[in-house]
Image 1 (cartoon, rainbow, N blue to C red):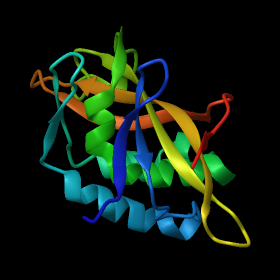
Image 2: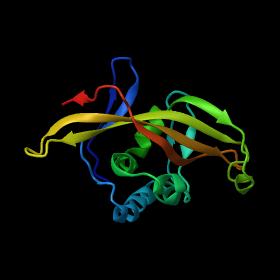
Image 3: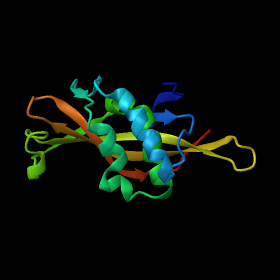
Amino acid sequence: MDRNINLIKDLDGTRFVLINDIRFKGKREEWKEVESLLKEYVGEFYEIEETCEKVFISTDFPDEFANSESRIGLKGPVAKAKANASQIVPELIQIATNRVFNENKKRKHEQDAKYGWYRYDVRFALPVYNDRSGKVERYNIYKAVMLVRHAEDKKKYLYDFISIKKEASSPLES
């Protein structure tokens, strides 16, 4: 997979992933392509630097990411942000911070999240292009929650990226 990305720290020292090329526009018909891209990660694992935890990518992740109720409700720039975040899954796992544990409360997840859920904060940035010149004007920064399930086999599996929001702070100038 060809990716043009950078890992960057902001002025506060918080890391984020900078995506230099928009691959997806966030249109409905692109979600099958997003899901197909995510299938390339299945069977891999990546380590969260802050906690040294391994996070595995299982076969249910691409479908959940691309077809969950929370994704279907996304519109406009936030849908585009989530679609493009599919390019940087390994790096988002790597920079995840602020782990929070939650007990499993849903019966349907008794086995796949037997030992509960972990939420982590992640951040990434997307370019905003000038309509006339086509050049990058600035980057909008987004924050999201990375949701990880702790399964019956005692492994942690990436489940989804949720609560994606554009940060209200001033965007990065190019």
